[in-house]
Length: 376
Image (cartoon, rainbow, N blue to C red; front, side, top):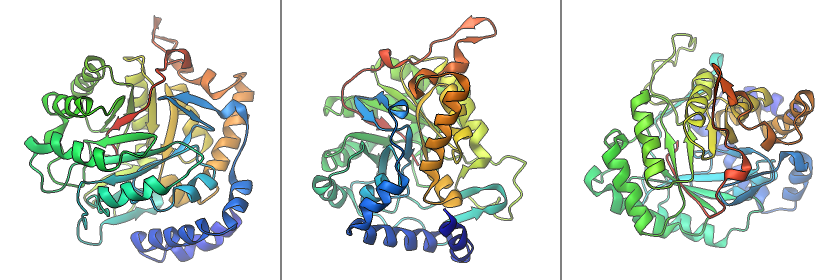
């Protein structure tokens, strides 16, 4: 971590996207050397109290890497070596895409946030699928699949299925219907479109499925999404994606840039979405948005998240972020008398205003494979 404190000012002199790819190239190089095992020994926290069973997978710890950091499945082993309990790659589309023009990523340093309008730049499903077929990662590995840029929303179900077919060698799949940075996604977030996409994937055998929600959705739209979770017997909800709305508290001069906002500015909003969803469903919830410390992760876990994900926290906290969160979670579990992370899931939901709420305990998890709906 001390090394990152020294390197961070230099990296922050680069554009965010240039800095990202510099780190990416370094990790890709390390992944091919014996240094990978050294990283693993330094950054992994091995403690059975951190283990979580969800979505038919066994997670060594609840801290995952969100989609967007490793779009093309090039460094999943390096990210696992940095202590992440699971890795989600992508978003991936059926054909390669260059994404939006640069600049398309912006730091909000004063706010510990990012705004991105990357536009789902990626190497395409066939290339990613070939990499996945050759990868061996010791943590669950998921793929975020998304609608191709110029595909009409009416043809979206077939497009998602094409991408799913090409990237099938993974432990779980995240189907992105809530990306704010690419054309045609707004039309997918109504109940009818979501049902068509889920139904097509279900017919294709892409089961089980999870749905990822935008933090910008009003409560009736969230309720519609949860109705689809119930109707199609989906296995979970991911809350949340990046936000298009801007809180008034933002200080950075980049606050007016268009794109999806992530990081600290949406932490409380994302946690409230976790709480809202967990109170209305008995399926596992993945908590995403503003996680950069153990306290952030713990709030989402107590609000009902079985596992959490981060991306922006890695930018501001550095490569030790997963280790520090996991170490901090152990201290918080001891402080509050929980024997494990699973025991803490939904701890704040038992009673709300005197009304008992559903808590997504491990005993209620389904134990079949996974495909997830929604992402960065």
